[in-house]
Length: 180
Image (cartoon, rainbow, N blue to C red):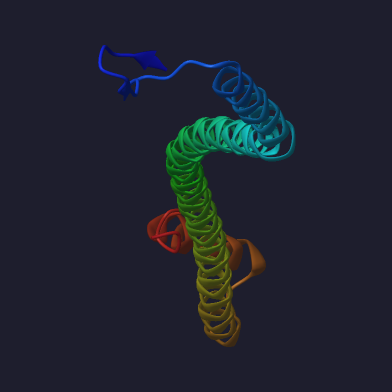
């Protein structure tokens, strides 16, 4: 305290005594210890939790990015496969068309061969019929000649005359008459 003239004491506005300094130091030390305690028991776990959460979010974002890249790659792969499938389908259809055309040509060739065989068989049958008709005409001529010969015999013509008459008749009719 400061004594003033007249015996009055004046109180200090800001009284710094040892007690105040000691209390202030203890308070600062207590606050510092409290800060260390909070830091150790509260702030550090909170920081660890925030860091682990940040790390987890970062990992999830990286995983999401990798999954997105894989999805894009799969999408591109599937699109390529779809294009190849279209090309493959077109190739299969083209091959089927070629086979169909080959089968068509083979069937046409077989039909032509069968038609040729039928025509050949018909030609052979015609030739056989011509031969048969020629044989029938020859038989008819022989029968006519025999009748003529019978008439000649009945008229008492000798065999020389009879043979001459048959030869003349055959010459008159000709070899090609029954072949037509």
